[in-house]
Every structure is written in structure tokens, then in C-alpha cells.
Image 1: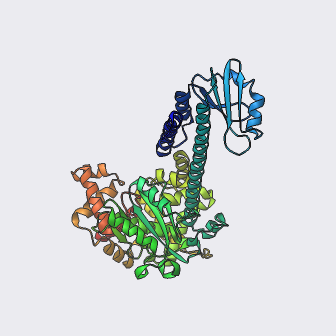
Image 2 (image 1 turned 120 degrees about the vertical axis):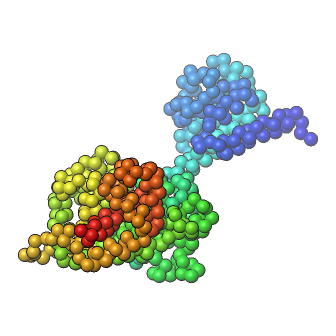
Length: 499
């Protein structure tokens, strides 16, 4: 049986532990003031936590007499620097007890001041409380360190993604020297684009993160432009012997497919295999596949697109046209060209987030490119032309031949039989209603409200038709808008044939 003193100590220690559990469960940062207030209620003393030997008060109860710290300066210095662990003294009419917390130099000191001598039980409770504050501060330091690591790991993963999207895997390796993610040692990768709630996205990325801040042989990157997208870079299983799962499926892909299967609100778009320096193309394919996946029963779609338009145009004339169109960009800063390139597959607000630029800065770069090209990049047909030219030139690194013939026009290129066959194949999945809606939407420069007025239907009906068209064409029209370019060219080709 405990005597009265033991019961008093047990009861107060139990209360102290309850306060510790409350803070661990609910507080992001340690609530030192809350602990000091609790201790004041138990002992009647006014309490302060003095941060270091400079006498700076980090936290205190409301009635703590800070004027007593000046005469205690020498004692506080000895406690803070480790010469003493605890001390009791008197300042004016107050009885003071000091406890040094922790083991490092410049230790904080817990100071208790009371009008009467503190009982042994109160002195012991003050000492125990000091230990609890030390634990809370260490937990807070650990939490801040963990958050800092998560932030830096997220930054590094995003930087790797940016380098790969720019076609620079060597730059990505240099940025990660000393801890190169295994993904960068692969020959080819696939982009898996997971659509899920933003809170789930962050939880998934953390749950599968390894101690290096990567995800084993994969890489998960929270998309800064679209908060519901988790970009998953997975080494192609055919060249990834260590990552093969059942049936040749990578473990990372197996996890993503299981997440979609278990969560009705999820969807997954999967690109075809691409070399690391063609990650941008893989991402575009994954975005198109995701647009289709969101309206299909299984909610998982792998990209099965037809040959792109740049692959069916006559090579030399098409390349001459593309180089002629884009030549003015050669005199512009590289960042302006990057902004222009990203604008072909994302809205300008998304471009700003992807490149970590302000929207005003992005707008300034776009205006510079527009002035140089002589085009209005707010016009979907102009963007479609520039997108096609960029696709043609990025696929060819040979220098321009000397004495070349005058470049053809885009209309000349699109009149070929192969272009006509491409357009017919591209539009074949669409019904008459979807074709009419797409044509009105393009004529309205992708303004759904204006297209709705022209068609005499509601804006929501127009968007429903566009969602159906996304699934039928396997092209993203409403999220990134990257699929609009193929629609523009296919409709233009078929219209020219009908004339």
C-alpha cells in the first residue's frame, strides 16, 4: 500500500503522463507552455523555461517574475554550460529551484519561483516535468528533421523528373551523385499516372518511400500542376531483372494496380516503354491513357495509340517546314523555349507550377515567343502547329542541309494520302454527336460555354461529350489539353478532303 506521499506522487506523475500522451497524440510542436501551466497548477510555483545562458525566456507561466533572472545570471550560466545539474537558491523574497534540461551545451534551464519553500514532492515533480519537456523537445526536433527530410526528398525527386522531362538523364544522375536512384540505371521506363485524392497521393508516396528518399527501383513524384496526379516512373520490366513481379509485372506497377482495384475513385494511365531521354513523350502518353481510364470499367488503361501524325508526314518536307516555323526561337533564352514547349501540353498556370515560376513570368516568356514566332499561342490551332513542329524537330538531330528548297506549308503536308488515312483512323471511334461537339469546341478555341451556345446545348452536355470523346480517342482533352492538337489536325484534314 502506498502512503499519502506515495499516493500524491503517483497521482501527479499519472497526470504528467496524461499530458505527455495528449501532446504526442495531438500536437505538431511541443506545447511547452501547456506543460508549465500544468506544473503551476500542481505546485503553485511560477515556472519559466530559459532558453540559454543569455537569459532569454522561451516560455513561462503568466505570473513568472522575469526580473529575478538578472541576479540569477551567473547561476543560469553554470547550469546551461553543464557545470551544475540543479540548484536551489533565493531571489529577493522568492524561493527558486533551477533544473538544467538535456545533455548538450547551452542547455535550457527550467526555473521555478515560489513564495514559500518548495516541498520535496514539488521539487521532485519539477524535476520529472523537466525530463518530460526534454523528451517533448527532442520529439519536436525529430519531427522537424523528418519533415525537412521529406521536403528535400520531394524536391530531389521533382528535380530528377524535370531533368528527365527535359531529355537530360545525365543531368539527373549528376544531381543525385552519391545516391543515384536505381531508375536512372535503367534503359527504358514507363510513366504510370495515378489519379487519386491529393491527401492519398502524399500518403502513398510516403508509404512506399525508402530510406534514400526514393521508392526502391521506382520514383513517385507528386505532380505540382495537378494535385490529384501522382507521377510514377517505373523501369520497364523487360530490362529490369530485379523488379520483375508475377507475369513480368513490376512490383511498383502491381502496387498501383491494386490501389486502383481497391479504391473506386482512383484511375491509372500507363505509357508505353520509352528511353529515359524520352520521358516527356512517356508522360504525354500516360496522360492520354489516364483520360481514357477515368471512364472505363477497370479504370486502368495502357496507351495503345496509333502512329503519331509526325510519323506519317513526308520526312524531309515536314522537317523543313518545322525548322522554318521554329527558327525564330533559336535566338530566345532557353527558359523561353522551355516555357513554350511545356505550354504545348499543359495550361499556363500548370506550366508556372511545373517550372516553379510566377504566372506573370510565364506570361512574359509566352509573349516573347509569340512575338518571335508571329503566332498567338492562346489560339488552339497555332499551338497545334507549334506542337507538331516541336515533335518533328525533337525526333531529328541532323543539321539542316545546305541549299534546301523552300519549305512547304502545313496545308501542303496535310494533303498527303498518309495524313488523310491517319485522320480517318484517328476519328473513326467517334460518333456523329462527338464529332460535331469537337468541331464546335475547336472552332470556339476550346471554350465549352461558347461551343454550347453554338450547338444550342448546355455547357455540361458539351463537357460530357468531350469526356466520352476522351475515352474513345484515348486523348486527354480537358485536364492537360495535350490531346487537342491531334483533334485540330484530324478535323482540319477531313474538312479539307470534303471540299
